[in-house]
Length: 455
Image 1 (cartoon, rainbow, N blue to C red):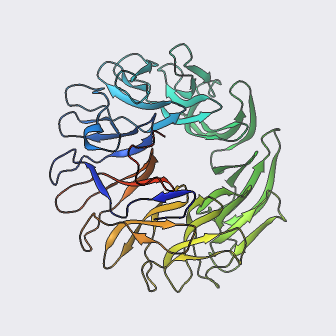
Image 2: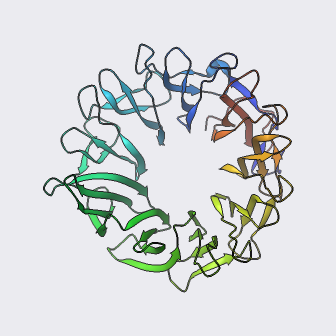
Image 3: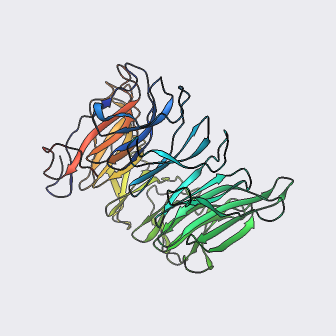
């Protein structure tokens, strides 16, 4: 089904890709990621433990990528991050501990990048982020503590980029890495193990070589919600609870500008049409979380629409951009928590699908954009929590068939497109446990063609 142009969903019934743990057992696939012409994920087959797997969309092409930690211990591989034709992930074994690995989607092309902290503990790579052709991450080499590293995929090109805790006995922790259009942003907490009062939070901008410090404040001033919008970075800073202040930096100087004051932390922030859209409250009508937008100025920060008029909030969450519209979940006081969409204006903000008719709502979650389609999980009394899909070129949504019967819940998660398939994880609650499922999605007019697109 679908339009004559763009993309077309070829199936409304999901297929089981492979029953990795036969019968009602679970392989619990997770961290589904499009790799180099294959789907990558981790799973446990009851023999090898949790290891990296690959799938081409058919049972015969769904198999372990590598037994990284032999002996059934499992390497606990993941999460995966695709960077061009290379996918990076962290995994552990008894020789190197938990270190940085890479794969091109083949067993032969799966290897350790660098043994950052030699020995059985490993460096525990985390916060994997791709910016300007380079992988950035945090790791502990056993000497400097957890700090910022970079890698080009080679051993010699993997090295400590910056030690933020160079003063006395200070230690770096609680990193957050966010890639913008023209900079990588790094938030880090610096503290002393013996004197927590000296703790502080810092925010930096880097091009991978030089660093510009944007913020240096006390740790109690909670800084978060880092959200790139064009060449800007928005973030929140809590100086005096319950107030939360919105700030912006332009990405080219050390200037940080105050934008607006809200009550409580935003329930979500997203870039849409080169503006920041967020779920925020001012306290003017109670804890009135509604849809707001900001262009980075105080005068340009306004409420888009009062979806639930009065003191009761609509609480927009799960922001997801599909083509030229913003989708989210909200409660207007009539339909319960349902799927909404907006073009950024009050008139263009409307209920998109009333899935569970009545005041309770279907509580959509796992919203995932795939071309013109929005895939998500939703609950109805008759069907339980199942996979749903909306062709966003028109109002409404429909349930994906072929998983759990009646209202037994398939609990779908981890929607991702790889090639010409939309994958997700679900259980039919009877014959099969939590396993990999798929639907075909292809360029319009190509549903009758074989293959998986190799995308």
